[in-house]
Length: 470
Ligand SMILES: *Cc1c(COP(=O)(O)O)cnc(C)c1O
Image (cartoon, rainbow, N blue to C red; front, side):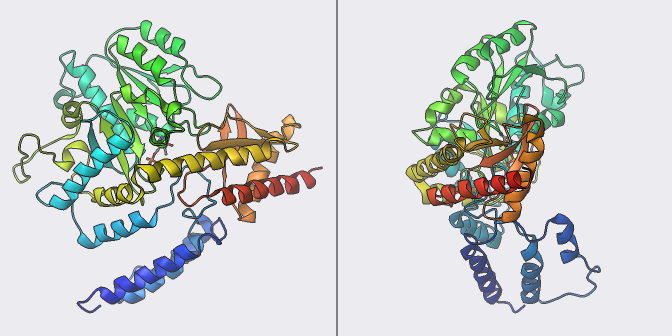
């Protein structure tokens, strides 16, 4: 490579644009699944170097067959956002600038972009002004951070310094979760020494929402420090916990309330859907993702805490070679587990600036409307059952509902058929012991026309499966 990276960067931009231009009409599945993709990459350890330009061409050629069209408009597998171009371009600048947001002296612009975009985010999500925001890799880490802040605070109130003295000998913390919590929220408990099995599980209703009387009974059955973990956006049904009923119960027992709102918290950003997550703002901490409904490039999540002091206490550490912060200043590393870190504030800022409050509201609302449209189009179809109340962006479907003994097999066959047809992509999931097709609508690129095509593709896949199982 010459000293000028221009030609290399320009070529990368051309290749990236080609990929994205073709995505809407591309098959919504990779040509090579994992087992076939490994040989695409295999080769001896490189002994000698190659020019960067040649490496770029080779990278793109090798990756191609194993790329999933997850930025495409009919990708509904898991809740995966579409990596909007405005964020991708900002992310390229982030890489080109090479900023390490491990401290505010090393990366002043990146630290400032985090400060300001964090404030915008809290405003758009309707959370209390003055919350602190840590820029992490995703909701898994955001749950870890929120729960760490809760662990710190509930133990501080009983005179225990968990950061200094750890959990051995500490007063026990009761951790209360709903039966239908996301597994990644449980992993936070595993990392924090609270145990993923040691939890008190509270019964939920048919949509996976925690039942208030059951929470009250669980908390009344014991005493001492407590953390209640709630949820905005159940991964199968999309349902949010009834926060106005649950949070006052938790408060009455002095519990810290953390909310896993990886995607569901964004309901608050869309006026027509905000009622679904009403009252969530009364919690103490929230985890949410940038790379789901904000459409950030991977990876971006946000740990938001009402009490910045508890947040900072749980995460901060100092060393003589790291700069100190003046009173009222924010050091980006004081709110996350890492030191050296990608400057995620740039893409976050760019996306919030690009969409604005109105653009985010429009996108969330449109995604929810498409979910409803797919459910409505399939509801009357013989043999297809819409299993959840489609209020947010999730649709779960069961096939062969009229032949229950065979419905798991028929459902999995329909999912496989849809995937191999490649018009739309959805995955399978289990809910209440039954296999379902799970359709998660969460991309900026998805329109009503895609909803219509998807309903047609699902119906066709079901007809094929039913025909060969008649
Ligand atoms: C996606 C998701 C997570 C995990 O988030 P990551 O960004 O993958 O770490 C946690 N909880 C819920 C409800 C989710 O949808």
